[in-house]
Length: 494
Image (cartoon, rainbow, N blue to C red; front, side, top):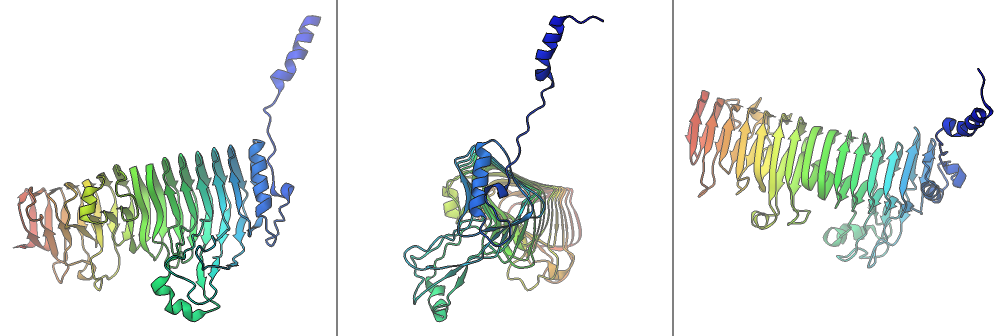
């Protein structure tokens, strides 16, 4: 076959464009920017230069295995476009665990070490472990701490005013502190601090504020006696927490996460075991969804929708809890600061709970109040479908809300008198029960079911196709039963 000279020239000109591979930009690495990576020298300045240079060049910051010490200087990035940090297996960021002087005075020094992103368009982080050993504040002199003295601890990972933040396979462990160390005058801590100490310690591990989207996926926590919440998201658009695990052998946080004034919140595939007290998540959001959350949290709550720590007038819209498994005390709490202030504030919308198991193991007969699956005081409508309650109470009274409460296809069961409260079920609003079973133990204090309406509250408790066994049924107000069965049941008025 003959090939013309023109064809050869055309082919030669086109070949570079047809065969040109996609350009791949090499990642930047810490050693290029002076990181020692020896577990002793302060690598924070080098890491800061690495992240800034990689972002400006449109490249990824790739961090090889090793210990990176974060000392007196914070590792931070500000005003960048896209930031991508990829940590290989074996990467650890470790703080120096120092003492910080001048805890007293008009304004205590801020504990400095933090990994921060501020005003970046997009931040994507993958892998690595951030290990904290707990900075301590050291006071000097007598009467160091007064009502006006406070120190605010920055979180270990701080994200503010960013468009999108995403973290995957990141592990946070240790005790971020700070603890108090009154070495100079130890007696002052015992005498003065309990009455006058006002230290604002802040959140422990992570905070996101004023971000459009925050996503945490397949991350892990290993907290050690932390005094504050582990995660905080404030004034963010969409928040997604998926695949998070938390394991601890010591009592920890007031809450695992506080999510305040956010748009859409999605929490799924969470597995938490902690002997502490508090809530898994405190939330104020337009919409929130819980799915496949598992907690072993005997003294805590699965969810707290509360305005005690938020804006009274912040709206709370619809919520869904589905396919969750809990071992906890007060599992779902919906409340305002008080009934009067709650009514005056913005309303809490509807909550729907589906296919979820609530349980509490062990002998809780000495508890002052019963372990309660629900404590309701501020939701307009609550629907509970196909849920199982084992050795926990359903406590919704006294309250003017929810205005609508319905339970369908649920099962309440108590396995022994030691695990059941004297008031197993108590609701203060008209409630619809459809296909619900109640099985008591028929002995001791754990046999009473209370179905009451508040005085001067219109409406009725309506039971349809329900089953009652081995219990004392006590009612007040307008109560109706249709197609129900009663086995070894004693009915009494309240």
